[in-house]
Image (tube, rainbow, N blue to C red; front, side):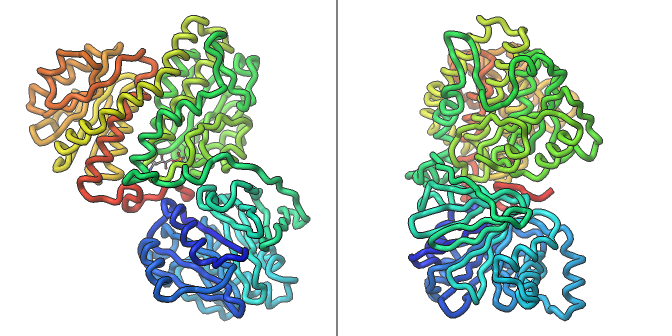
Length: 610
Ligand code: M6R
């Protein structure tokens, strides 16, 4: 959580930093702050609340200078307040930090015993004091002081540091939390994520864990974990700056919902051969022989990515015929999950930085399992830890509620299932061709669905005043019911539950009444007749039904108050389609309620704490 940005160059630093923070605000938005070196010393401005509050303060009190660091916060240690906002200052040093310092209590006590007075409740302030003390103790400059200070820290951090005595220098360090360096023309930047830097440069350097880097307008110097100079290659990032803009949409979430046809198409591009009925996920690092020897697939993920993993399980078992387990990242360690060397552990994560999923990957690796990352952010922590990666190519996802990354994850998992099915000799070529053909048609079908967005908006008015909503689905539609409920609750704050339709009679049926809208995903698939019976059970108890039904299914008219039509498509790809109107439904309910859709309360896009 939290976003950090640094700039050193020839332009005025403050506006560039605020602009970078604006793109990172999805990571945290309870307070923000900035420190700029004005040629004489370090000036700091901080403000409680969203970034716009800080921007307003800066209008009244502009900061001059061409070197600076900034931060947008999601509180972990200490409540949201101006005192706890970053940057934190100790003597000549200012620090911004993303992550959690696990030994902060011991360090705080040690510093307090040495006479340090603290002005915040944060773990970050400790870093500022440690760097200051290293300078006092004779460190050979800011880089050396930061290197010595971070050696005392355990936990995860990405930091950027300014020092009064070194104008034109930012020192950055990372361990476990993301930090990217942007190399522009006569300027250097650092940031928690690629989109924060894209309007300046597409040339990026990804720091390794343990690296400490010195950024100057004219160059970058990196020391590795062994304190020796380290070469980190520059990489060209092919995300364009406009991808991180709202592009005329009211919210990023709405834009990202509409980008799904391209997100899916890009994820498939170059990875399948329809004529040969084959899939070529070259980066996964798992040849046909190793695929054949697998005993089990173990999917780990959190939140929306967990729902993608649940769909993936259906595909892996039915298409690749490989026993598959799905587990929440946060539960893996606590239930003593067993991993084996012939397991393929697939970690699904949009950000690639989710702490719970990382912890699960580490547990699996320690047991000798092979790990495959399905991630959207290049070079993020999970792909770094994994033996192979199958990147989704959804482009930057800014809205906190995940949408296009979910459908891109589904596309990647379906490719994986076909690849494993073919490699293991259990999937006939004709069936593989049917699945791949259906998958290739998804982008244009999504396009058609998105053309009906206005109708979904009208249906959303029905749910605006609901206090609770139930989502039902069977088979492949069950994880989509879970996802529909998650989307609604996280941005509209309406209590929603997703249930397997077959489970309704085991309890939730007691809730059915005229005030409880029930959204039923009921395409004409293998589970159709059974789900239809569930709709009848809801109607018999006067529950209002919003049905997602296959275009042309006339029987639905008598059973539902509202029908959202889904294009006719093979069962196997239906989850990629049925989820789209549910995303729109959640969006329009939240928007009608006037909520901040892209930055819902209490949430952050990247959850780097356990
Ligand atoms: O980056 P990840 O995919 O690992 O994130 C997992 C969850 O935190 C994420 O999906 C979260 O549930 C979203 N807010 C859902 O919209």
